[in-house]
Structure formats: structure tokens, C-alpha cells
Length: 315
Image 1 (cartoon, rainbow, N blue to C red):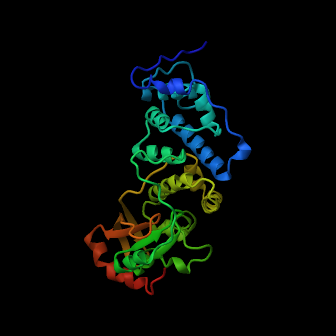
Image 2 (image 1 turned 30 degrees about the vertical axis):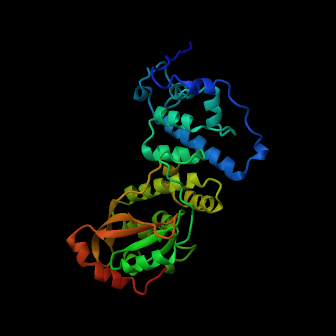
Image 3 (image 1 turned 90 degrees about the vertical axis):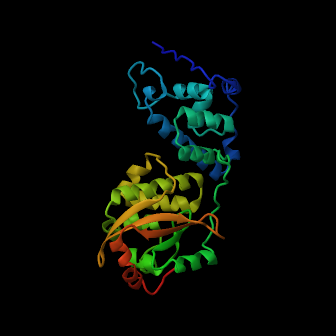
């Protein structure tokens, strides 16, 4: 028995369905670059993950017969977004087809994407974000950022690259998490420390919550840089070294940076609580400067001790 979906009323019954009624021929796979294929695979995986998390009732559709897989069917997403089933299927198969901004907006509405997820969708499709802000290119920390990081002491502060490499930090940050320059192994990286370093896991009071939040922010950046060797290398290392990272990675959940409070069980100074904020990027687009503000009086009073523990300054 075949279930016939009623076409929704409203703006989704527009030219999108006509434009995509006859899917274009896929491009020659040999003519695409590794980066292109990586972006298409990331887009396909993201769409599948968002489709599978939704129930028919979430989008106003009847449940119908028993479903063999979780979430919406492809034909339901195609109907809701105003495209043909074949075209949407090719999109989830990472075929070499183009996607217009109009169709991306339709997919975002159909999949009930958040503003952050919508920006991520546009980025994966190679389009400028819907708010018009260009993606940030990867850069190294500039001299102005390094001076600012030092000037923020005794408040912990650090700079990370798009791959979460620690590019600069001050004495207070070294006192809080341990001097990154003195750790063995590859260059200092915040994701490696959080997921692969037992001392950092013990330091964070809410390790699961904080670790997953960082992973979701990294996931957004990694998908935007699909095919990049540095991201691929780091992701592979984390997938192999952390069961939690591997489990959360395959949910395809993403997040943007937002102010957050983190608590630490410091081995020398006891419980410390900081509010993490992102500051202006100044002369170095593509990197993130984070400063930690004491969330209570007890933490504020310990800032000089924290800075002293981190001397001499690394970074």
C-alpha cells in the first residue's frame, strides 16, 4: 500500500518543485576535487542526521504505516522543501549537483533547522551565510592578539585556531590548565587535552557537558573545512582515542560559540568558576580569543595565585 502525502499549502508550493522536477545530470566525479567531494559528503551526512531526528508530527504530517528507520522519509523532506524526491536523494548521496539559496532556505524550513544549523547548511553548500557574514579564513595569532592575551592577565585568556590549536595563552591560563607548551606529544590543542588527557578530564567539573559542547563547535568548523588535511588528521586521532568523541561525532550535532560558565577542581586552589567570553578578533580573522572572567568572589581572589602558578608565560 502506498501512502500519498498531501502537498502542504503556502509558500512551499512554489517554483522550487518546478525547478527541481527534472533533476540535473550529476557532474563527472573525476572532475571534482577531494575538497569538493568532502564538502558534498559532509552536506549529505548533515542532511541525513537532521532528517532522522524529526518525527512526522514535528512537521505536521501523519505518522502513516510503521517506519523501518527513524525520522522523516526522503520523500517527506522533498515535499516539504519543494523539490523532487530524486533530486533530494541525490543530494543525500553526495552527488555533484548544485543547490540554490532558495532551495537551501526550503531545506532549512523543512528540517526545522536552528539559526546556527542554517548557517552551517549554507556553508556546507558553498554559499555565503544567510546573514551575509563571510566564513572566517584560518590564520595564526597576530602580534596585537598576543599582546592583548598577556595584558588580560591575571584573567585566564587564550587564542585558538580553527582546528583548536592553542596559539597563545597567558600565565593565568597556564596556571589554570597547566602550561600547554610543557605537555608531550603534538602541538598544544584544546580538543586533544579535553578528550585525550586524563588530567584535563579530572579538572573539569562537568566534563561530559563541556566536552560535548566543544565537540559540537569543532564539528561545525570541521564540516566547513571538509577535505582539509589538518582537520582530517585531528578528527581521526580523536575518533581513535576517545570513545565519547566517536559516539558524539556521529550525531552530527553542531553548535556556535556562546558564553558559558565552567567550573574547575584545581589541584592547588580548589573549586574555581569562570565565565568564558569570546572577544574581538582585531588583526587576525579566523582565530578565536577567549577570556575567562571569575564567576564568584572566591575565584576572583585567587587570580593572583593562579597567574603565579603559570609563570613563566608560554605561548
